[in-house]
Length: 288
Image (cartoon, rainbow, N blue to C red; front, side):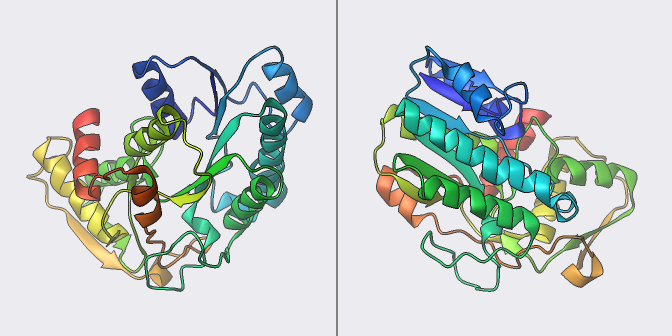
């Protein structure tokens, strides 16, 4: 049986749908089962035979985290430690979702799983602490680092862009931060693959869709597909302008390069991954 933690979030919703589509037995929880209280977790799983735990719960407000450090660490580090301890007690395999923000983004190459971590903000720090809590306390785990996540059921960059395309005549988007968008449905598929294969190749894996882009080019593609699918008015005059990170100041620093190599996950599990443009097309089809 699978225990899905964070089933009401953007990724969790798609994973829950995938679990149902595959007719797999599962239980799920969200904020009503407090991951920062280990006794609550133990009580929830009492008398249940859990074989897999998928942890999608997280504090993800990157800028807010700079002011809410204690809360970010409580959820992303302490909560993850509690989940790990419970996984160990249950002898359940743990899939934990992490982030590209564990890197500083200085290197321009595709980042591999063994590259040195060096977060540049509180959010990244708290997520790295969560990873370390898994690594130091259990051996049956899959840590999946992903990036630029978007899906039907949550706030994300494509939704924000589509709204701005409707509201404004000029939309400015940074063009000097590089990485790859990730469609939640594609990440859900990877997780289903691990479970259906009953995988034992434990460790850290990177997963996004394929290809490399920046936020500006991502926005341009969203606009093109949104026009094709009548989500925005193509007759309206609109300018999408590239800007530098310095022109769009945020409380938390962002990694300049968070392009993740997928070679390990592809070679280990024999999967093919969608190009990010095709994944975005699938998303636009889903929401139109």
